[in-house]
Image 1 (cartoon, rainbow, N blue to C red):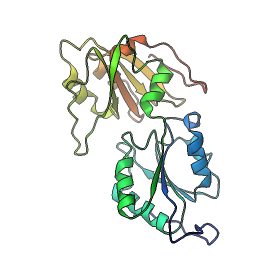
Image 2: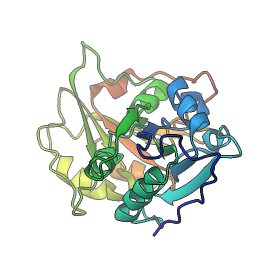
Image 3: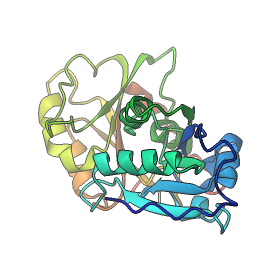
Amino acid sequence: MLDIPAISSQRRSPAAARPAPVLLVGAGAGDAGHLTLAALDALRRADVVFADDLVDASILALIPPHVDVRRVGKRARRPSAAQADINAALIAAARAGLRVVRLKGGDPFVFGRGGEEADALRDAGLEVAVVPGLTAALVAAAATGIPLTDRRRALQLAFVTATAQDGTTPDLSGLVGPGRTLVVYMGGGKGREIVARLVTPDISALPAAVVENAGRSGQRWRATTVAGLAAALDRRDTAAPTLIIIGEVVGLARSAVMPHEVHADHG
């Protein structure tokens, strides 16, 4: 169980009988350059922040010193607090009168378990508000110069996670092909399974990209094809968050540099 910080009378909400809404805040993908003004305002007003490990250090540095920051994990193949314990900690902190922020990498409602946490909080009788963040697919697209949609190449766009709740790889049939773009989140560790489901004669030559650390100073990406995805994934940093982008739009990529100097490496 996560510890709940002690609350001084100065920090307790004046209307302790009615807790403030718990804020599910998207930190965006990568560094503080992708943090929204609404997210920054929420962090500055918080008493306690429960932060995912994927939240960049440059964002945590913007949180005022008096705010209690609790790291809860939630990074693939690394130790994390159980989801039930995170839910319980959020509920207990809110009921204690704290202004609570749940800080998540990317967007809370895009593969961020934000829906599960919102349900748990509302079931406990608490109000919830959501501050959206830039999800990794959008940041990766901007940094690599890959337009996720383009009326000449792709009129359909799908986001999927590589791992379902039961640990299996979801069915990707019908999501890949001419006129479509597929973005696979957290796909690095399931690369060979994904490729095995995708490689067919009609799409094996379709352009694809592997993007590591989207939006961070260590970002790099490789252009390949569906047939070459397994080899490209073998070259990735296994500790880095990885996105896979598949579709004709990958062929439109240009070397792009974000305003705060995210660099691409075609290695």
